[in-house]
Amino acid sequence: MFDVTKKLKEHGFKVTPQRLAVYNVLKNTKEHPCAETIYNQLLPMYPTMSLATVYKSLEVFKNIGLVQELDLGEGSSRYDANTNQHPHIQCLKCGRVEDVDNGMLYDLLDGVKEKTGYDIVKQQLYFYGYCPKCKRSH
Amino acid sequence: MFDVTKKLKEHGFKVTPQRLAVYNVLKNTKEHPCAETIYNQLLPMYPTMSLATVYKSLEVFKNIGLVQELDLGEGSSRYDANTNQHPHIQCLKCGRVEDVDNGMLYDLLDGVKEKTGYDIVKQQLYFYGYCPKCKRSH
DNA sequence: CTGTAAATTAAAATAATTATACAGTCATGC
DNA sequence: GCATGACTGTATAATTATTTTAATTTACAG
Image (cartoon, rainbow over all chains, first blue to last red; front, side):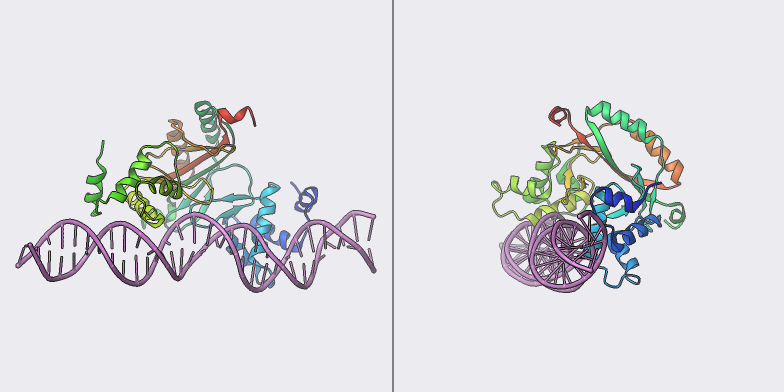
């Protein structure tokens, strides 16, 4: 269990209410929201919050390793406070994005390393399909 | 071996020099170029070519399944005339993008289907690291 | 407390991509 | 052959997510 405040200070960033607020939204959701969604969620509590601040805060958290950015190809990025490297899956009907917790990833990684000769430092793995709820009506 | 002309006609699209030119650039490279790169490569031969035409052509080819779009997170899309679902890997130093031909993908797919209950229809799998050439100087 | 660098904010700028409008082209029926 | 109407290619303008700017405010070390 880490402390956001501590981590910010460690990296020489100031601890501001806006930053904590942005982080807490992400920490308390499974929705993988985009910057605008986070912004809209914060507006009632922080009426002067600006979208640029949300973007900048997310950038800071990305750089200190507390948040990862997801690009599902929707035109805008989504964000995830779970920074473990894990695949994501999106429903092509309802648009939800879920985590995929899969141990087989490591086998795949080893295979790719061996085939390509690369030193692999990160991945972005996205699956698209129809979720159990949407399957029927599909 | 398929015929681009035939495929275009089958889908009711006209066969234009511009479209063939865009397709041929993609077909004859392993570089996974972006729209602008394709455009610049065509300009000498097609001085009136416009970037919008390149985008439109790529869109058509994407829709009839002759080209796939890659989003490596660079801000612009890259394109690949190899439409097999295969992972890609990019070097974080020199920026090159290569195909990864890996049979283990199917095991991973089965695992993800089972864990999530989704009907999976496509994936986008990107790996990032340092290629053999750049490894040393890294 | 107070000074100072860093952060916030609103507004303007940027960059990739897409839509619009229109002139030209082509396939088809006559 | 030729008129017609749909389609294409192009330049231009529009769009949208994100970033930059610049003035003001804030966090926090001393």
